Length: 339
Ligand SMILES: Cc1ncc(COP(=O)(O)O)c(C=O)c1O
Image (tube, rainbow, N blue to C red; front, side):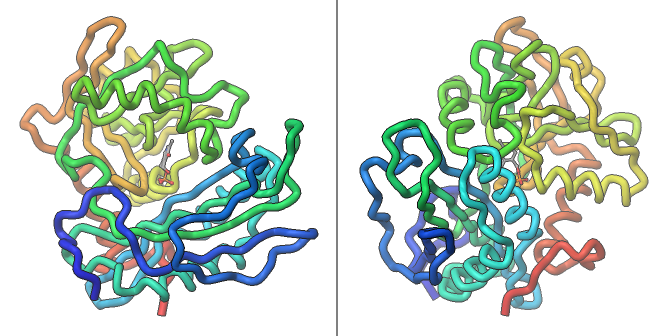
């Protein structure tokens, strides 16, 4: 077993033993290679470096109560990576190759899967990049697909404790017909300034509005947004947000709990009326929000008045985590057990 303080991990990089890689060359994917290098050798004119031809994914493997290793909804990550590839003209990674690479990299790094009960998990980072050279603005002819893994703790240092976020209007993360709906590096480059400023000002994340009208909530830097009121789970419908697999799962859980699920525009004004609000994603599962600050109007919206997450967010969080850890029946068939 690796010597790691499992209970105190942050969401950061810890070196593991192996990663896996494969190249698309001459019209086909090559053999899966195992590497213990933390670096890649890349052509100086690779399209990933110049024209942002790159996409990534993020998913987790958990050590369950029964000792088994479970991966949560990997098929959805494989599909999303295919959509990302399609959006920026990269070679798609077939789901069976994605799975083969994932199973291999998990098995090779078993000693880095945090033990059950520590609150940590093994984060998998699949990466697809244009590795072939181009000088003109054109898609590459060669691609590299790889997965590395790293054990992680909670994304926000607060864990499941409520955080503050701030609405930004002076930066956009994604354009209405741009690439906000896929997981490509450029979106994250565009979100850095707002994100770092939010952190510097004491907020856990920035909350982006739709870039065309600045009227509706889009999403938080690294997570989707949801609000709860009148037994409804409400989450934005927008062409420029990443379809979060966590959000997709929470919608199913909310419906299963007897709630009405709505995907529609959420105007900033509506924030006033929510009983609970939160950010959701693989990294954080749910981050309950206790305050939303609007930097332009200086207005604040307050939630979690007793300082704790609301009852519905708590129930959703516990149910989702319980399924991931093998404590609650996986009735939707979301987990893949790796042996
Ligand atoms: C911009 C953005 N939105 C939302 C999410 C949450 O998506 P998921 O639940 O699939 O992790 C992520 C993380 O992948 C993200 O980067």
